[in-house]
Length: 263
Image (cartoon, rainbow, N blue to C red; front, side, top):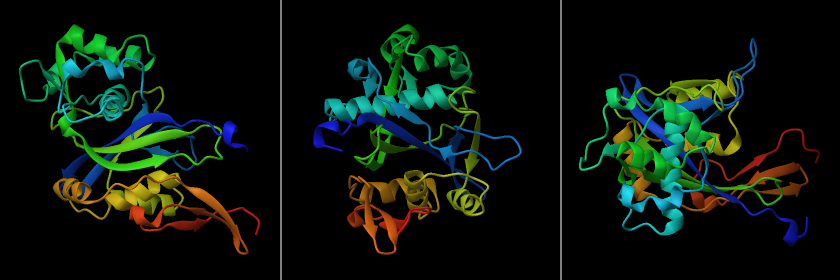
């Protein structure tokens, strides 16, 4: 593939919504593909592409003063996608510093579909309901860019957020057909046992998350860690084809043999 044929990565954001449970920290994940009577489909974190209008709501956000336009749009996209895909909304009534209550949130679910279909912008939604997004509730966790050899590429930033106590997370039934609150260790165990499908970037970020025992510890670890941009590449070696990432990114592995690839 020549340089001019390499697809430009599309800006995207993913959100890891966390809560503490009696058994340990859990993360909310959705199932994008599911097959009856077969192993559960691919587990992913809610997220998606930056949408038109995400960049135009600075007057409807807190915590945006130190963000450039790219960072700002990504964080708006992360909050919007969380609302579209699982019904959690990191927003407050104008003039309040407190997240909206679950009862108020329940009156807003009819906006999820028009937002996800692009029939309404996030700005129109916020103006209509007089809400303010709370970007300062997001914590940068990771940055991955799809490899250059892929036909579709995404420049994805991952964010952590604490789950609001009375917001009920549930999959949207369209892009996501199932959902689960799950401990990182359990997700990894179920993937290893063949009960779940978890793609490489998701798995490595779950492994990173699993180093923390609580939400507070996860937020602290993310704040103290240098976020290194990860752009995977492949290397053909005598033993086979390996998928590699930047070692300085701090993940448990920096290379892995690709199954089914000839030596």
